[in-house]
Image 1 (cartoon, one colour):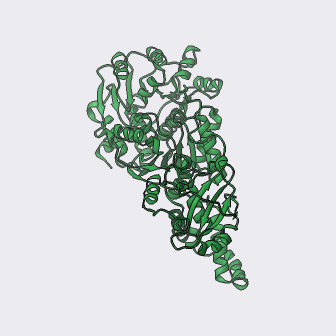
Image 2 (cartoon, helix red, strand yellow; image 1 turned 60 degrees about the vertical axis):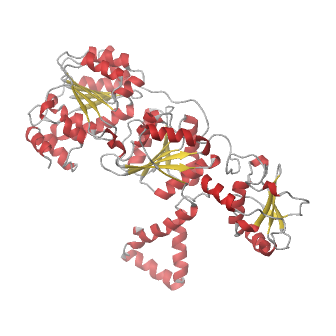
Image 3 (spheres, helix red, strand yellow; image 1 turned 90 degrees about the vertical axis):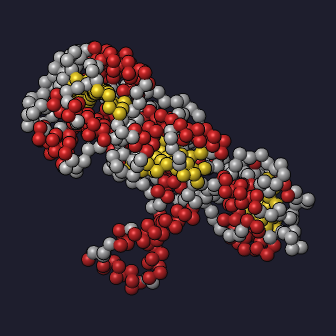
Length: 580
């Protein structure tokens, strides 16, 4: 065990036992800093990034004020320590962390947060608590109503103090701090130290020791940042493919508005993902149910706004997807900081449409991040991973039980090995959401520039065969997504398709005569997009300019797909506000 923790365990055996049960053998930098000998009993102003282990850090730091050198705490009365956090999710998370840390000390810990029954909280406060954790608004309410006594308070912790000031809680914080004993110990934890935090520290701390955790950018050390180029109409499809590609135990997908969260959650559920939503419009009970579903594995994707997701700490959160660009560097770092916590590796994917490229580059530069740029995972890449995952699935790799052996023997007697394997593959794939056909806008443009100009006779003197499909301008048809779709449906190459012309309610295109029969046969097969393709009469003087990248042509913003209704990750709506 680390010498710092060894020294701590000699004084606080109950907390050391809890740490050992959680395999804490080495403190994080912020934990080591607050346990240093020269910090004992002093007020602290700590600058540390989210995910650095600061909850356990201040839990250990206030041990002397809460439990002293005793083996266990006595009966609970007025609280000995108070922790103030900006949001109810963070406050409840702090309560859970301190509960296991002080479990063997017999501590009674109570949470007081907005959205919960204040009468039940009052009853718990009247019954006594060693540590109270709460949001500023609810704590002030209990103080004003006489439900919260602070006369015995020995320590106060302000967690994410900069966020509380940004969310407008300065008056509530000052009211709470004015009601605490003058001789209390005050610890302030903040990701940044803006002027407002420094002023608050000067007013309410005495000779505070300032601690800046070495390498404050360490918050990025365990996060692999990726910038993903996406076509404007393929954001949702790119999110689907990222979820399928990474196959993370838990993922948060961030959007900027409540409307976007609702739409994206519904889209993912339609695709077969177990997805929950978190936004400011949900009650606390609904939020708790969503978070519990993520923790116990019943859900693997959470679609959330920034405010609702603040303070969430999920142990298996390996992937963060920014479906919409965050507003500034701080929001981006907060979002990304949900993963890569406490030494665990994580991935943060920022989706960047072409028109947002410069803003994304500025955002990343301000955050000091140099991501890996690329397109979204393709359907072929995901299918390749599926093959590897199937082979490694415990259902396949594991042995066969005696009960299963009878069924296996029956199958072997009535079916061929190929039939059995095929059925197994179908069952395995049925539980997986289908991958989407997406393009990398940059690579698409490069391929288009390399293509030779198409001629109506395909250069060999043979006329092409004309077909039509039932998507036109009324469904946002565009050559940039029509072309790959037609190649996939017909089983042909790009060079086999000539002129494409788009009309109001249909599109017509030309296929090389020597592959037209194969194309027609393949195109008749049912497809999930339900686009009907049938032969058509030739068009007179069909201009080549309607191919993407030739002449003026239809004006586009990039590859488009048929219109699927309003909303989406880019839909603008009412933005979130903080809640106390």
